[in-house]
Amino acid sequence: MSLKHFLNTQDWSRTDLDALLTQAALFKRNRLGSELKGRSIALVFFNPSMRTRTSFELGAFQLGGHAVVLQPGKDAWPIEFDLGTVMDGETEEHIAEVARVLGRYVDLIGVRAFPKFVDWAKDREDQVLKSFAKYSPVPVINMETITHPCQELAHALALQEHFGTQDLRGKKYVLTWTYHPKPLNTAVANSALTIATRLGMEVTLLCPTPDYLLDERYMGWAAQNVAESGGSLTISHDIDSAYAGADVVYAKSWGALPFFGNWGPEKPIRDQYQHFIVDERKMALTNNGVFSHCLPLRRNVKATDAVMDSPNCIAIDEAENRLHVQKAVMAALVRDAGRDTRDA
Image 1 (cartoon, rainbow, N blue to C red):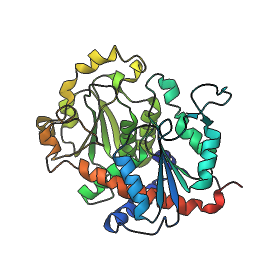
Image 2: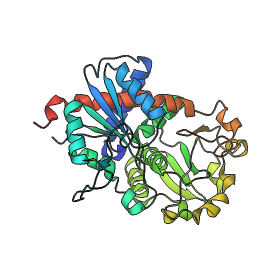
Image 3: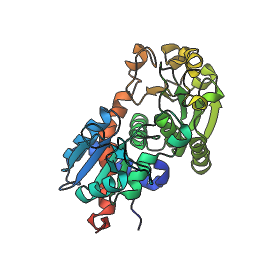
C-alpha cells in the first residue's frame, strides 16, 4: 500500500474528510489523548508562522507526542531540491537526504513553503512539498504551500458548528477577493474554493476582473466537485449581486496570476479595488451571513473593525479549529501508516 500523505484535500475521499472533521470535533470536546504517545513530528518551516506552528506543536503535545521545529537557512542547513545540481553554492544538503534522515527520526513531517512569487509555472509545481513526499518514508503534511488543506478543514468545521450540521449543501457561499497593499499567495483561496465546492455549497467566486481568477487547476477541481457533490460555481465581478442573500462570506487577498513575477504593473490595478473591503454595508446584503478569514488580517484594509468584531464573525472559531483538525490529521496518518512503512 502506498504511503498516505496530507498534501491537499482533493486527494482524500469525502468519507475520509468527513471522518477527520468528526474526529476534530471530538478532540475539541476532549483535548487530551494518547494517539501520538511516543510519536514525533518534524515541522519544517521555510516561511513564518504563528497559528500553524503553535497549533501543530500544541496538538502533538496534547496527544502525547513531540514536535521538533526546523527552519532551513536559519537553524537548519539550506536545502537543495533540484536533481543534477552541482551543489557549490549556498545549499548544504539535498532533499533526498534530508527527508530520508528525518523519516528515520520522526513519524510525521510537516512542510510550510510559500511560492517564490517569480515564476508561477514553476511555483505551481509545488516542488518543495512534493519533494518531501517523494523521499520521505513517513507521511507528509502540507502546512501551507500553494494550497492550505489544514485551513480548509478548520474552515469547514467552523461552518458546520455555526450551522449545526455537517450537511452544508445549498448554503450560498461567497469567496471574495479583498484588497491588500501587497500581492499575496493564492493558497487559501485555492483551498476555500476546493472545500466549499466539495461540500456541495452554492459557491460564488467574487473578484475584480478575470485577471484575478484562480489557477485553472483549482478552477478545474471546483468544477469536478460541483459535478460530484452538487451545488454550483458562479464567477462574479459585481459586489452587490454576489453578496445578496449569502450565508457565508469568506475573504482573501491574492495577486493576479497574469502579473506573477512582474508585480509592478499589477499594483496600480490592484489599488483601484480597495472598495472590495468587507464592510457593514456589504454584509447587510447577506442572509444574516457569517464572515470569516484565515488570519492574519489587516483591519480596515481587508475588513472593517465592525465586521471583525461582529457576532457573525467566526474567524476566531476557525483559527481555534486549526488545533483540532490538525490533531485529527496527525492521528489518522500515524494510525494508517504504522511504523512498518519505514525503509530499512
